[in-house]
Length: 326
Image 1: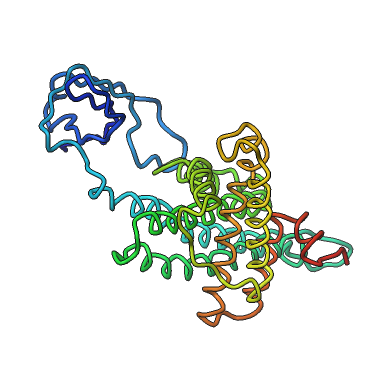
Image 2: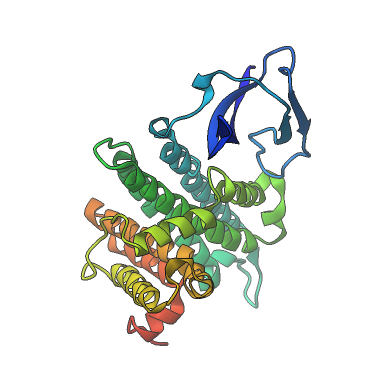
């Protein structure tokens, strides 16, 4: 199989440094590596390992002028960012099903004669119901957002922003949910044939593939605070999750205005950037919840999803959301 690589290299024209650019470079064909290209295979990755990871070096490789990828050709970037999480919701559904079957089968015997399945305990029910609700809401929201990302009438930064929000929200939801249901399956949750340990490792790969989630969030969060463009969000009156999103951005914008050095100061790096992923994920929570409401999902599903999102930032919901301990 012939393969090509998207290589970032510094473009120098007549001695002038034009900065890093992407180049499409052929690596090898069915028989051999191309001249100047050296590739060293890395060890296998745990999980499904869909790719052959390697360290590839290029030594004086000649490419035509057409090899440089121009900005208008990078329409595929948001497509890749959102596509990488496409299978995550299905994996979460499978993990919830496996955990549910295990919980109905696994039982213990108390003082009575009849065995009691562990699914009868609320501590076993919650992680499974949480995973089911999250997977249902994420699936609906994902299909809704795909139409926005493929809408060429929207500016490229807006389309990429939607992709970043979806990737971050879906991957983090799946990561937390699979960890919980896997743990509730005891030792069975660690066995490869039960799928969940593999899903956990695949989710880690999704988080760093097609742009590391945290890095993407830092850039998007900074651009939104600087108001370089705006993302349409659900109104704050629509849900508690929407209020949370609006509040986080208002707090960060006020803090940014008070910083003497602006967004390039050390204080911005210390106080504002650590909020980036949480804020972007909050946007995803409110968008997903809104999509579920518009699609007419049952209220129990929406309530469980809302609880799952609230767990991400309990301090805000306690201090400003009006939620107290029962």
